Length: 519
Image (cartoon, rainbow, N blue to C red):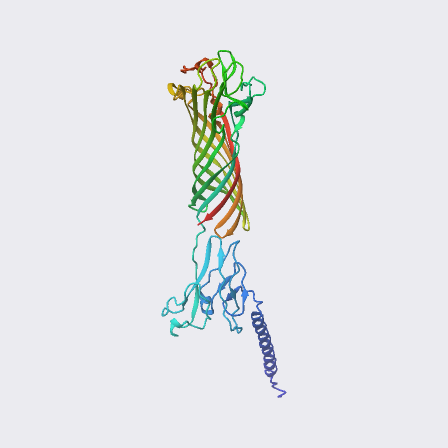
């Protein structure tokens, strides 16, 4: 070194070189660490690519199908509470597997997601079918001819609507409220009059809550279409078979074992009396043999058209507001027929004289109105629980029809016939007097538990109840008060006090067994 002019530049130069190598070494270490972290999957970049080393992406992550495509295109990401597992993917890097995973279906609540594919150039077009297996980013299908460069999957969203139509078919096993009437057929022991004020008399047909009340079968159909997620329209029809009660003598009977009659209140006595059908040894009367038949039946049907609008919804539950048109038909029919044949003539008449009496009373109830209510459903897996509560409000048109006939036969030749029996006096007795229109309300409730056996088929069991507050029933509008002297040969016209109209309520309830089909 020159002591006069020392070479100071060498020392700084050596120092600068040492510092530079240290910085390069540090940069290399950091670069190697970053590459290692990327290969180990610890990078914070949440981007995945299809390949063979399967790593499951999480919900909401961005998924790419190959290196080229990821640079400028973003694959569809999937969201939804009901999203199923996404397709297997792998990190970009040197880790290439030998097998190619098949994409799993990805579902989202109202869409089903599927994927299609294409080539990076326009030479091949859409060379893979929708839903086909994934190809490696560096390969082309045979249809590409090897001239199109890298082929890759291009995500395609295919919209699939939910089931927007439904149909429910149910078998109904319901019980209808028992109905009442005055006693219509009575019996007593042989030699005793079958009159209501005579000890030992029992009622064979009629009486309080004695008509109907047994199990009746029917069916119910409910169908409709959802016009959107929040609004739908539908219709419902149900019918319940006859709820009936009957009694019959089974042919001609004498009064040796029991006496039978048709009871009434005689305004001439005035006291209870009866038209003898079969009797032996009754004081003050000749003996008779005869027959009787009586039947009561009730038919109910309903037709509805409604709209439904979503009010509340959440995870596994929904409540809809229901509103629409309602129509009900309730028909009650009551018939009584009797034949009396005189077998002795100690007091009056002749042996063989015959009296036939028939009565038929019908009431029709026709409801026209609206409905409003709520339907709620809770879903848990394949099980669902549904409730329906609503009220029908409107006009009940009530119609009464009463027809009857009495025929007296002596010596085998019909002597005379008179319109009107003993309960219905005439062929259209008191029709206009008993016809009315009444405002009626009918609350209805239904609960149902269903299990889904197939994606669009469920079986259900439920309970239904419906109540009408104002109906006209046949048994409540029978007038058995008249003058007994009119039951003569030939028969004369009966004098009967004016009938008093009686309105009633009615309910029906029971079990529903059904099948629900969505399509």
